[in-house]
Image 1 (spheres, rainbow, N blue to C red):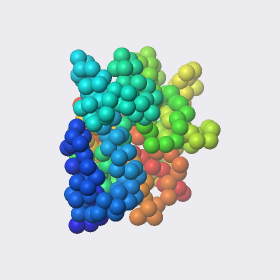
Image 2 (cartoon, helix red, strand yellow):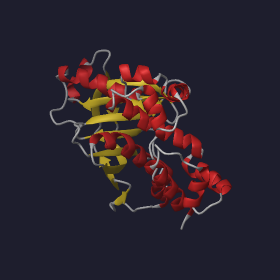
Image 3 (cartoon, rainbow, N blue to C red):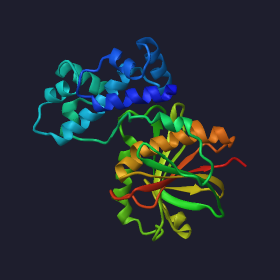
Length: 299
């Protein structure tokens, strides 16, 4: 058994026992390692300590529990997911999401959770136009030459660089745009929506733009708070992927596809790309199950 497979076995066990007491010795035994080496290897491959990972995954599940079980008490969620008491749970929840469990339940916001990793994707390299199936998603990489620039109309924010835990500000930006979209008359009839990550305007931040494709002749008529973004022509690497539903597609599947492209595929193929990532959506309904990441190849 390879090292990553040992750690993946322990990850799967944790996911299935987040409401139970989890002992380090038991996890190490599942991975066929000593507790010392297991913790070192886990930290190296996952990027979190074992206990930090368990805490983050418990908090993610507890947040869902609070919303879907409104008759329960906060301390019920605390005990269910392994926290000693209400106070410990509240401190942990606030440190990760920036609000108390009570505030979240009374005024729900989109949260950016730490998702269960799939380590196998780090060790599988596929050629272009060959599908990769792993952990509930199907992924395929191809190339395309965009002959003419495409114009998008939307909104943008500056977002701190980091692992994205806390309130999902990007998701809230999408919600804000979708409220405005019905009033926009300059959009392409069958145009696609895009979420674009670009270099930030200040240190420690990146720019995130969300918008929909618009008629080129209407680009001059954009007024605040809307803005224009141009997808440049040129050669692109395209990562197409699918998931079971749109929520999974736009959260955990997007994260896994992004990490695979930047952490594995581009490096293994020796391809350099421009500092931007474009998420292209054919549709954003709850039933949507496919999307693409476009990465512009450096000329």
